[in-house]
Amino acid sequence: MNDTKSMIKNALILFAITLVAGVLLGLVYQVTKDPIAYQDKLAQDKANQSVFATAKTFEDVELDASAAEMVSSERGGVTIESVKKAVDESGAAAGYVIQVKSKGYGDFIEYTVGITNEGNINGISIISIAETPGLGMNADKVITPQFADKAATTFAVVKNGQLSDEATQIEAISGATITSRAVTEGVNGAVSYFEKALKGGN
Image (cartoon, rainbow, N blue to C red; front, side, top):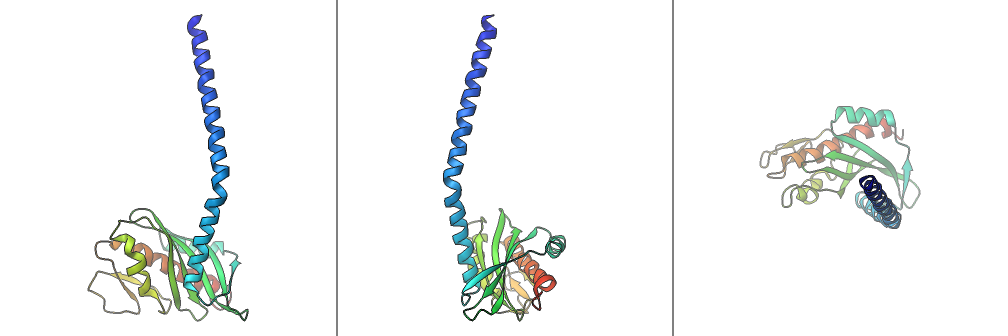
Protein backbone atom coordinates (compact mmCIF):
# COMPACT_ATOMS: atom_id res chain seq x y z
CA MET A 1 0.00 0.00 0.00
CA ASN A 2 2.81 2.35 0.92
CA ASP A 3 4.53 1.57 -2.40
CA THR A 4 1.35 2.49 -4.27
CA LYS A 5 1.04 5.79 -2.38
CA SER A 6 4.70 6.54 -3.05
CA MET A 7 4.27 5.86 -6.78
CA ILE A 8 1.21 8.10 -6.94
CA LYS A 9 3.03 10.84 -5.03
CA ASN A 10 6.06 10.64 -7.33
CA ALA A 11 3.81 10.67 -10.40
CA LEU A 12 2.01 13.79 -9.13
CA ILE A 13 5.32 15.52 -8.40
CA LEU A 14 6.61 14.66 -11.87
CA PHE A 15 3.36 15.90 -13.43
CA ALA A 16 3.61 19.17 -11.49
CA ILE A 17 7.23 19.69 -12.56
CA THR A 18 6.34 18.97 -16.20
CA LEU A 19 3.37 21.33 -16.03
CA VAL A 20 5.42 24.17 -14.53
CA ALA A 21 8.22 23.61 -17.08
CA GLY A 22 5.69 23.68 -19.91
CA VAL A 23 4.14 26.92 -18.66
CA LEU A 24 7.56 28.55 -18.27
CA LEU A 25 8.59 27.42 -21.75
CA GLY A 26 5.39 28.88 -23.15
CA LEU A 27 6.03 32.17 -21.37
CA VAL A 28 9.60 32.33 -22.70
CA TYR A 29 8.29 31.72 -26.23
CA GLN A 30 5.68 34.46 -25.89
CA VAL A 31 8.30 36.91 -24.59
CA THR A 32 10.91 36.14 -27.26
CA LYS A 33 8.84 35.47 -30.41
CA ASP A 34 8.19 39.14 -31.24
CA PRO A 35 11.85 40.25 -30.84
CA ILE A 36 12.98 37.27 -32.93
CA ALA A 37 10.42 38.06 -35.63
CA TYR A 38 11.53 41.70 -35.57
CA GLN A 39 15.19 40.73 -36.00
CA ASP A 40 14.27 38.37 -38.85
CA LYS A 41 12.38 41.19 -40.58
CA LEU A 42 15.35 43.54 -40.16
CA ALA A 43 17.66 40.95 -41.74
CA GLN A 44 15.18 40.45 -44.59
CA ASP A 45 14.80 44.20 -45.20
CA LYS A 46 18.57 44.67 -45.17
CA ALA A 47 19.03 41.84 -47.67
CA ASN A 48 16.33 43.27 -49.95
CA GLN A 49 17.86 46.74 -49.90
CA SER A 50 21.31 45.27 -50.48
CA VAL A 51 20.31 43.73 -53.81
CA PHE A 52 18.21 46.73 -54.93
CA ALA A 53 19.75 49.81 -53.33
CA THR A 54 17.68 52.20 -55.49
CA ALA A 55 14.34 50.68 -54.51
CA LYS A 56 12.08 52.73 -52.27
CA THR A 57 9.70 49.93 -51.35
CA PHE A 58 9.38 46.17 -51.71
CA GLU A 59 5.96 44.76 -52.47
CA ASP A 60 4.98 41.16 -51.77
CA VAL A 61 4.34 39.07 -54.88
CA GLU A 62 2.20 35.96 -54.62
CA LEU A 63 4.38 32.89 -54.95
CA ASP A 64 3.66 30.79 -58.03
CA ALA A 65 3.48 27.39 -56.32
CA SER A 66 3.73 25.47 -59.58
CA ALA A 67 6.87 27.30 -60.70
CA ALA A 68 8.42 27.01 -57.22
CA GLU A 69 7.74 23.27 -57.18
CA MET A 70 9.33 22.87 -60.61
CA VAL A 71 12.44 24.71 -59.42
CA SER A 72 12.67 22.50 -56.33
CA SER A 73 12.38 19.42 -58.53
CA GLU A 74 14.99 20.66 -61.01
CA ARG A 75 17.40 21.93 -58.36
CA GLY A 76 17.52 19.43 -55.51
CA GLY A 77 17.82 21.12 -52.13
CA VAL A 78 16.69 24.53 -53.43
CA THR A 79 13.51 26.20 -52.18
CA ILE A 80 11.95 29.47 -53.34
CA GLU A 81 10.86 31.08 -50.07
CA SER A 82 9.28 34.36 -51.18
CA VAL A 83 9.22 36.98 -53.92
CA LYS A 84 9.06 40.77 -53.71
CA LYS A 85 8.83 43.45 -56.36
CA ALA A 86 11.44 46.20 -56.05
CA VAL A 87 9.75 49.57 -56.69
CA ASP A 88 11.71 52.79 -57.26
CA GLU A 89 10.81 56.36 -56.26
CA SER A 90 8.80 56.91 -59.44
CA GLY A 91 6.61 53.91 -58.62
CA ALA A 92 8.06 51.81 -61.43
CA ALA A 93 9.11 48.21 -60.87
CA ALA A 94 12.88 47.86 -61.12
CA GLY A 95 12.89 44.09 -60.78
CA TYR A 96 12.34 41.31 -58.29
CA VAL A 97 13.90 40.04 -55.08
CA ILE A 98 13.69 36.27 -54.83
CA GLN A 99 14.44 34.74 -51.44
CA VAL A 100 16.06 31.33 -51.77
CA LYS A 101 17.12 28.55 -49.42
CA SER A 102 19.65 25.89 -50.44
CA LYS A 103 21.43 23.06 -48.59
CA GLY A 104 25.03 23.88 -47.80
CA TYR A 105 27.79 21.87 -46.16
CA GLY A 106 26.75 22.65 -42.58
CA ASP A 107 23.11 23.72 -42.82
CA PHE A 108 20.70 25.56 -45.07
CA ILE A 109 21.88 28.86 -46.54
CA GLU A 110 19.25 31.57 -46.97
CA TYR A 111 19.73 34.58 -49.22
CA THR A 112 18.10 37.02 -51.59
CA VAL A 113 18.74 37.26 -55.32
CA GLY A 114 17.91 40.52 -57.08
CA ILE A 115 17.02 40.23 -60.78
CA THR A 116 16.22 43.26 -62.92
CA ASN A 117 13.34 43.39 -65.39
CA GLU A 118 15.94 43.07 -68.15
CA GLY A 119 17.12 39.77 -66.69
CA ASN A 120 20.39 40.76 -65.03
CA ILE A 121 21.60 39.71 -61.59
CA ASN A 122 21.47 42.93 -59.58
CA GLY A 123 23.01 41.43 -56.47
CA ILE A 124 22.95 38.65 -53.89
CA SER A 125 22.78 39.06 -50.12
CA ILE A 126 23.08 36.25 -47.58
CA ILE A 127 20.57 36.33 -44.72
CA SER A 128 21.72 33.28 -42.78
CA ILE A 129 24.64 30.87 -43.16
CA ALA A 130 26.35 28.35 -40.86
CA GLU A 131 29.23 26.97 -42.89
CA THR A 132 32.83 26.24 -41.91
CA PRO A 133 34.58 29.35 -40.49
CA GLY A 134 37.32 30.60 -42.79
CA LEU A 135 35.99 28.53 -45.70
CA GLY A 136 32.27 28.34 -46.52
CA MET A 137 31.56 31.33 -44.28
CA ASN A 138 33.44 33.43 -46.84
CA ALA A 139 30.66 32.91 -49.39
CA ASP A 140 29.37 36.46 -48.94
CA LYS A 141 32.82 37.87 -49.72
CA VAL A 142 34.00 35.44 -52.41
CA ILE A 143 30.99 33.89 -54.17
CA THR A 144 28.18 36.45 -54.18
CA PRO A 145 30.19 39.31 -55.76
CA GLN A 146 30.91 37.10 -58.79
CA PHE A 147 27.24 37.18 -59.83
CA ALA A 148 26.83 40.97 -59.81
CA ASP A 149 25.69 42.54 -63.10
CA LYS A 150 25.79 39.26 -65.01
CA ALA A 151 22.99 38.23 -67.33
CA ALA A 152 20.72 35.75 -65.58
CA THR A 153 21.63 32.34 -66.92
CA THR A 154 22.55 28.87 -65.66
CA PHE A 155 25.83 29.18 -63.80
CA ALA A 156 28.40 26.44 -63.23
CA VAL A 157 30.99 26.17 -60.45
CA VAL A 158 34.62 25.61 -61.40
CA LYS A 159 37.56 24.96 -59.11
CA ASN A 160 39.82 27.77 -58.04
CA GLY A 161 42.11 28.82 -60.89
CA GLN A 162 40.08 27.10 -63.65
CA LEU A 163 37.82 30.01 -64.61
CA SER A 164 37.53 30.31 -68.40
CA ASP A 165 34.13 31.99 -68.92
CA GLU A 166 33.22 34.75 -66.45
CA ALA A 167 29.74 35.09 -67.94
CA THR A 168 28.61 31.60 -66.92
CA GLN A 169 31.20 30.27 -64.47
CA ILE A 170 31.63 30.89 -60.76
CA GLU A 171 35.00 30.23 -59.17
CA ALA A 172 34.64 28.09 -56.04
CA ILE A 173 35.98 29.02 -52.63
CA SER A 174 39.13 26.99 -52.10
CA GLY A 175 38.25 24.15 -49.72
CA ALA A 176 34.51 24.93 -49.79
CA THR A 177 33.21 23.54 -53.08
CA ILE A 178 29.97 22.28 -51.51
CA THR A 179 29.10 25.74 -50.19
CA SER A 180 30.02 27.31 -53.53
CA ARG A 181 27.75 24.89 -55.38
CA ALA A 182 24.93 25.39 -52.88
CA VAL A 183 24.89 29.16 -53.40
CA THR A 184 25.25 28.80 -57.17
CA GLU A 185 22.42 26.26 -57.37
CA GLY A 186 20.23 28.62 -55.37
CA VAL A 187 20.96 31.43 -57.81
CA ASN A 188 20.19 29.07 -60.69
CA GLY A 189 16.92 28.26 -58.96
CA ALA A 190 16.06 31.96 -58.62
CA VAL A 191 16.87 32.52 -62.30
CA SER A 192 14.72 29.55 -63.27
CA TYR A 193 11.81 30.87 -61.19
CA PHE A 194 12.21 34.32 -62.75
CA GLU A 195 12.06 32.78 -66.23
CA LYS A 196 8.99 30.70 -65.38
CA ALA A 197 6.92 33.13 -63.33
CA LEU A 198 8.18 36.71 -63.53
CA LYS A 199 9.88 37.51 -66.82
CA GLY A 200 7.94 39.99 -68.89
CA GLY A 201 5.94 41.16 -65.88
CA ASN A 202 4.02 37.92 -65.42
